[in-house]
Amino acid sequence: MSINKNDSVDSSLQQALALSPEEIDFLTKQPIKFIEGNFADYMWGGYHLYEMKGLPYDENSCIAAESWEISGHKKYPSRVMMPNGSIFTFMDLLKNRRLAGLILGEAVMEHFGQDFPILVKFVDVHKHMSAHLHPSVAAAKALGEVDPGKEEIFIVLDLHEDAESALYLGLKDGVTRKVFEEAIGKEENILDLSHKIYVKPGEIYRIPSGVLHCWTGGSIAVEITESSDLTYRMYDFRRHRPTHIKKGLASIDYNRKQGNQLEKECRGLWQPTETRGLDVVKTHNALRVERLSADSGAVSPIEIDSRGAFEVLMGIEGSLEITSLDSNWVANLSKASSILIPAKAGSYRIRGLDRENNNCALRISMKIPGGNGEY
Image 1 (cartoon, rainbow, N blue to C red):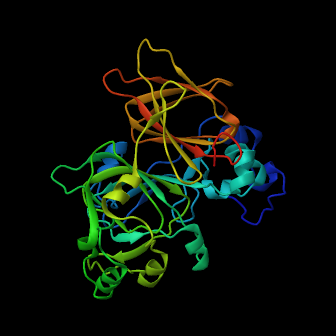
Image 2: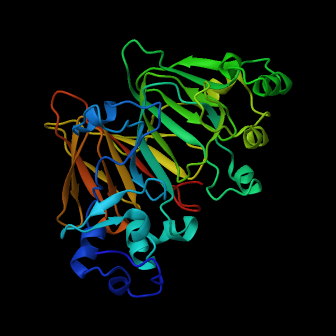
Image 3: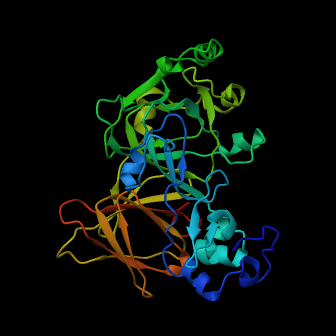
């Protein structure tokens, strides 16, 4: 079964995607589990993501720098296998207006459009990334880019043994624009001009648009961002990949505070909410990032209101059982796996399954303007 990309979004759902009512229910009334192994094989990656996910690999396997867990982006779109064995990309499924509304939620569609608005990844920084930055929405538009600008949330999960495991963030105090641009012109290692942070598991970093940064080898993390792959490399350790100096210089935010002050601004902390087991970290865009924590055993399950919109759940520790409050679905979420809960699937409760470890997941959704999102 294949998707006809010329189908109008005004066509009936069943005709446009050739889906049966049962298949529509499969995609909207229960969590969606996408096909594993949606890896980006960037040269700075390794094989740890295979191990995290329990996937087989050998010396002939592609390097896995990033696992694009739930993606509607054309570069590495997530794929879902239907009960009859056919496969659809998430990107193509959302081209149908009605199906997108059932999955994303009407309020999300109204404010953010029909494409999937976020991109979530597990990342294995086995070797140094490039020193790079992401433009703001305004800068990307001014430069004529197709993808929007973005900022990122990085949550460090673990470190590789005996690796540097550092984040270079912005510039050192006192480094002027002139000094920086001269170093760029001479193709010098601009990390020498950057503020260095040795990271630890559990730490959260917001990477604002327009801020130079580089993760060095050794960090395993979650990356959460708007659905954009727009990156401007400024220095790549002479690895012969393209750089984007002109666009990067046009996008860098020279008005930001640097050094320790920038680090303080970009560090995130989990803050408790009124719901037991639910913490939130402050974001500066439309993304809402929360943490669900559920003890196993005698503690009662935690009930979660779906807010009438999609949610992404990413397992980061232990194992969780997720049970619908409104219908009959049940899903398990283990470490290094992810599910999408469609808006139609409704509210749910969570219960921890691992008695020896913490049971935690990230809950990622959108702040709806004028609603509870305060956005």
